[in-house]
Length: 420
Image 1 (cartoon, rainbow, N blue to C red):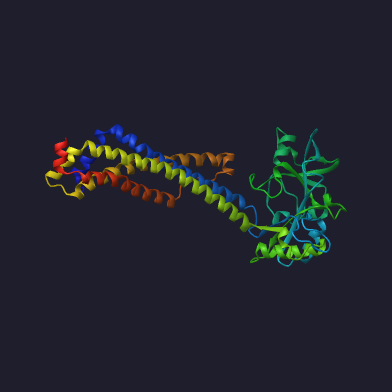
Image 2 (image 1 turned 90 degrees about the horizontal axis):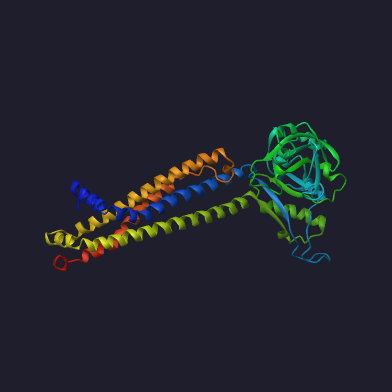
């Protein structure tokens, strides 16, 4: 059956004459496509925000996480806790061949338990000592006011520090910028503040969040205690994997701490490829959940459309019988009900996609001007998702019309007229 003007008018008339039923029928499809568009946009926004946060870290960065030994060695039992020290850092810095640079950091005293006094106010917080390679080997920190510590200051152990944005707001509530150039005391020792800093992302950090800490040169924290516990990270040469770098670093530490040379899994090297893999798996899980929710709602709508069309077939039994009696072919009946199902689903689905895009665009403008952008960035639907959505609508329309068409084709002209 070729659809001409008359057939379209008839189809439109049928939907208009059952306006309330058509609207109620289409709500499920509308909701399915609306939520699918909004949720996939939100998923894109989460992925974009994660990718943006990871930009602060070099793609060649690797972090060394000490654990416990799993093998005995030279009289030492298994399950021995491994602690990395400043001496280990110096040994790795001198011997490692697969690392461009090695960096470490540690805390002054216990984490979160250093007294900081500034502007007549006192707080207990974390003071972190950084070595000169920290910003290039681990992660970048951004100076909001003033500047970060310079490499020369960090190498010479200058009595300077940077203060996290959150702390600056607590010490100078009216004007955090005034903190730059002032003198603060850290456990009674005076330091000059050269900058107020934050890290590239408030939601992604390695070990500590610069926004809530005070940073000083590492040598000021280590002093003469070369066995002080530190946290290590390196920047690998191009082409080197985290596993290869981890093996080399482990062997250096194993010789110093009498560890079994075969027990390499007791120190875990975590490269950016692992972080990317973890976040990729999380992103895929979120997207899968989004599609399950969206498709579940859409399937409910398709079933609703199919059920309503089954009722319509029953109500229009006489009409179908008359058409069959005057020579209408099965494909004519098939085309009519398929077209009704497709039209209902395409209209409802298109409206759902359109409103979903509007909501996503509105939410996107909000995230760009607020801190929500740290969690969700550019939450817009992509072309691939929209294309898949249109294909899904067409397939759904065909599926919704199959059962009604089958029932309509079962009706015989004489039986339909007699029953009526």
